[in-house]
Length: 279
Image 1 (cartoon, rainbow, N blue to C red):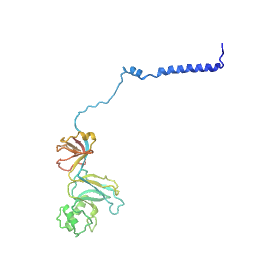
Image 2 (spheres, one colour):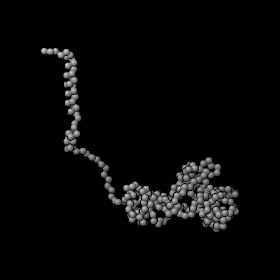
Image 3 (cartoon, rainbow, N blue to C red):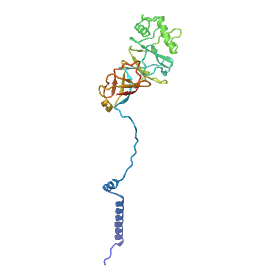
């Protein structure tokens, strides 16, 4: 019988073949084909858990909105004299309130900012016996006899504004009407939309307040899906904080971003934030 030239090499080769066979057999036991796995799992029951909520299903769409006017204006305030910077020290008017002439809007660095509705805005400080169209406009805004001349009645009316608000009129023994402490607005219904909170530093680009003039309406942001569900002629209900729902009115008009609710005759001013606008 012929001997192998390298018996150990042949033995090693045979051992490798045996090990490969054992490994292939082990892999076959572990790895299953997709078809075999599907057949085995077909009768297996899997437990699925889900949270169940009980609700009344309605067609109503509820969206939070904001009351705005046909035009908006930012009010800025400069630092008073002897103040390093302007900081809001009081903000007594609640957003959503309709403003009136002579009302204290806020105080900045412990000096008042009054609102006055003028056809001609104040363009200077006014002193006793000054004459001009701005004087006449101020007198009309304060409900005084408008002769266009700063007299005792005008100075007295302005002083009463300061005293009622808890501030000393400027000028001391030589009082005058300080233009920077009166915010002139165009006549017409005007609603305070937002006001800076107490402690806010009013940098040049930071407004003290934003007001909205013109007929107020409720503006909301709706998704494309929500806008598609709002049909012309649908009834609308507006729910505000601490009040009863306001229903009725003509159908809303809407665009790709906002829904505008128009035609409501309301007693008093609309609030700045509407809890629910239901269509």
